Length: 325
Image (tube, rainbow, N blue to C red; front, side):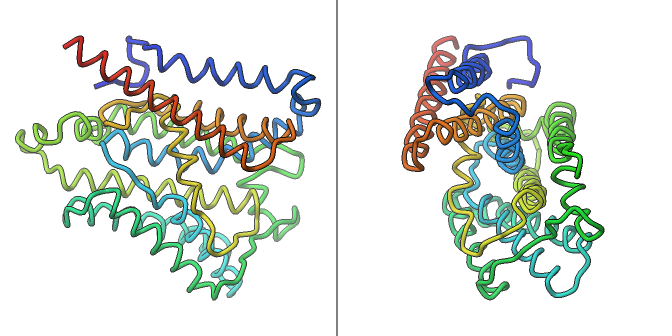
């Protein structure tokens, strides 16, 4: 099993940071974009990285365990919608945010039960949960757009605490780095992290050794749900307006960031460092294409190309590993 900061540095792990630097330099060139290399663009990159990074952190655990979670985008949006609805009904912002995290975590727990106990394949279970959460968010809010506090006054401390201060300090970046470090510790320094890698490497051997694989698989999906709740808070603080029926497609951006960061879709290997780099790469690609004047369809096209290349590299690496055995 590959560990974070392991001694072995393979080509794919070096490719993601190299690609990030090359992309940033490319889009900064005057003949590509005259506005990309600026402070405002850098802020835009950070804004679009926060919530994707949290989603990607959570689904990294799932993919390392050889699973998948297609419900992370709609889970995040449903949790944010319900939190906004609670605020509109008079609940304090602090209490609503607690419910946001609880709701998203509960969805992750339900995914774990469906997969580990009821033996539904992860793809089908989380696809169903994706549709379920999207519907619940719309039903609870009566298909009404929900809004979080957006001003930097006494009632707008939510935005100052979780997005950026009135002086421009990026609070969201601090939270992203804090949970990035906590995620590293959880993945590399705890029994849970070891078992997450073991689930993806050889679940049957893990089970035969006496480990309750169902329990740890449920924990993996529950942790993913927790990160969805954190992502919902960051998303709400950044954009303030939450629209019912949205969230589809966000899971693809997060999963793409994980794959680009070097986590193997076959399970058993991956790092949060790679995932963070992948999240920034996705944001730089999206922002860079926008600043270059390309429309949405071209952004989707190039994102798909990047994901396919990352998967091909993963397949190549796995084949080389098999030959080395």
